[in-house]
Length: 146
Image (cartoon, rainbow, N blue to C red; front, side):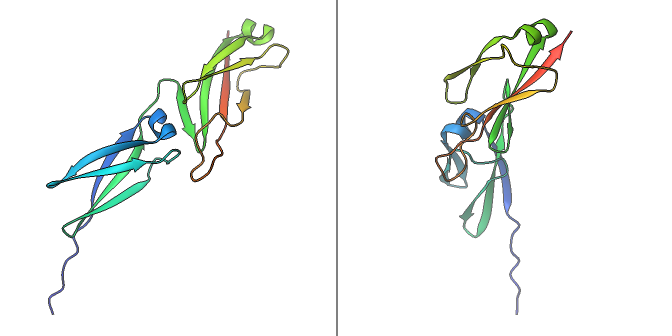
């Protein structure tokens, strides 16, 4: 008999910002004559795939995270690099850190030992953990210079 060749899936990458992945968003794409919607759920990870079937041709959309100005994602945690001078690290500083939901986290390093490479985690201020009400942490990575 005649073997039907299965067409290789067509892969298309699409990028969302960390804010969009945090809140969830909808993206629309055209496949042939059809417009399809992808509902990006809060907390999805880079590499998440959504597959559509267009007249026997599989089209796979793959989520990528757009680079962020000041945050990086580490699993369910969000990392923020904080540069301090040696003087600031010794005396302590009051920080106001923006978060992905638009709010600010206030933090003081006064009376704490802050050194190059130290970090502080704030539970519940990171990315949504897929499928639940919990969130990862916001991790502040201290870089001390001078």
